[in-house]
Length: 199
Ligand code: ATP
Image (cartoon, rainbow, N blue to C red):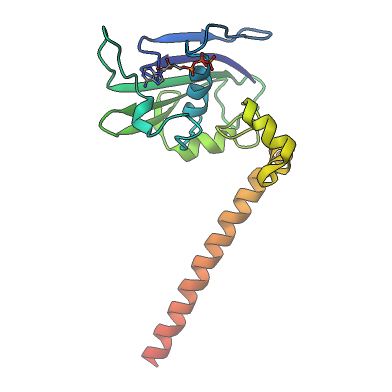
C-alpha cells in the first residue's frame, strides 16, 4: 500500500486547493517557519478521523477552516482527501485505489466519504485498523510522540507495539463485546424483574 496524494482545500493556511503527490522514495516538505508544514501533517491526521482539537493544534474544530487573510475571504468549507494505492490488498476492500475524504462546513455539518461515497467515521477507522495508518497510529510521529515513547507515558510504548503487531483490533473488539454483554445482562435482569411483577 502506498500513499499517493493529498488534496487540501480550505484547511488551515490552505485557502486554495493544494495537491501533494507522494512518489516513490522520500517526500520532504520544506519551508520557512510558519509557512504551513505542520498543517500538512494536521490535514493527514484530520482526514483519518482525528477528533481531538488539541492534537490538531486548534482551540475548536471550526478553527481548522481557512480563516482568510487581509485580501481573501474566509472559507466556508474545509476539505481534505487522502489517496492510497491498495494493489497489494493491505486495506480490506476490493478497491485498488482508495480515497478517503473529510469535510467540515462552518455551519458545523461534517461528512466523511470513501471513494466519493458518503460513509461513517467508523468505516474509515475500521478500514485502517492495524495497518499502522490512523489518526493516532505510529504512521505519524511528531517530536512530542518521541518523548512520550521514550518516557512510556500512559503505556504508549505498548500501544505502539500492539498496533504494529496488528492486535489492537482484537482489543477493540473485546471491549465492544464486553459492552454488549453488559447491555445484555442489564436486559436480562430487567426481564427477570418484569417476570416477577407478572407472576
Ligand atoms: P514551524 O516550522 O514554525 O513549525 P510550520 O511551517 O509548521 O511552522 P504551521 O504551524 O503548519 O507552520 O502553520 C502555521 C500557520 O498556519 C500560521 O501562519 C497560522 O496563521 C496559519 N493557520 C493556522 N490555522 C489557520 C486558519 N484556520 N486559517 C488560516 N491560516 C491558519
